[in-house]
Length: 142
Length: 188
Picture (cartoon, each protein chain N blue to C red):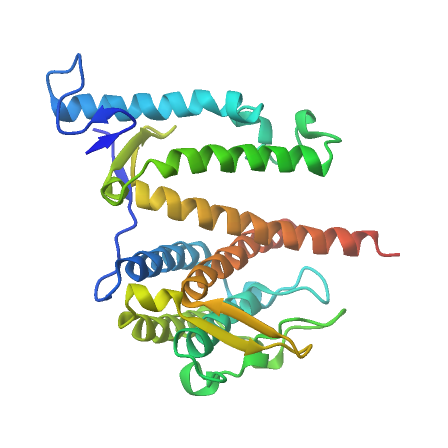
């Protein structure tokens, strides 16, 4: 089984332990992905302004942007996802990725969850956007 | 030693199709998060409206159960209509959606506590699982044709039914989170 050029049956080069090497490789993979956010999208992790602090306003980076700007972000994100997912086989869905959270805990997910979470995450914010549109319409009603 | 939190989608057991098992596993994960998010809501919270004409959190929870059951009945089971009172104990219109401008939550939900809504959700999920358990991969391509109010037709397949049950619940879950935020701000 291979994932992104990594042979999961062997210890990666430079590691004596297969398990530790794979763990490190997964972290590298995640770190590399995080660093790729800006080249792929043109904005970085913090530029969406979330989470907002109490009383916060939207980030200046997004001020005055037309719909086409956001459509562009979404289009580039989806194209990037499709390229990555096209390489996955069924066994890859069991593959687990671990990352360290800010509070020090380790969060382990499998790739099946990643794909599921993309759908639930998109759908959840889609529902919120519909509700905000409702509020916005009511707020502008004379 | 650092704690490890595992968030894994495991295919749900007892399904003929691995695809169905994964989709239902996603639904169960979504429900686990939803129930965790709403666990502290009181009957007052559940009936609160940010403004007349806007949905309450209780209405959205009831609507998730109503929609899931209706999708199971007319989608997975191919019935001409759904028998919600028998399965859920409420009628389709009892969720109150869509509210007319200035509308208030429906009488059927007034004063209901969280246990009422979790009961609806549990019955809806059990019904869906029973209907989905026997589906094979090939069944997911089966198409259902439904009449539309404008006289036209709507065509969907069973794969879409299971996908839509998830996106529908996740969308209203997102709205419930936003309403919880608004409720907290309104309460000062």
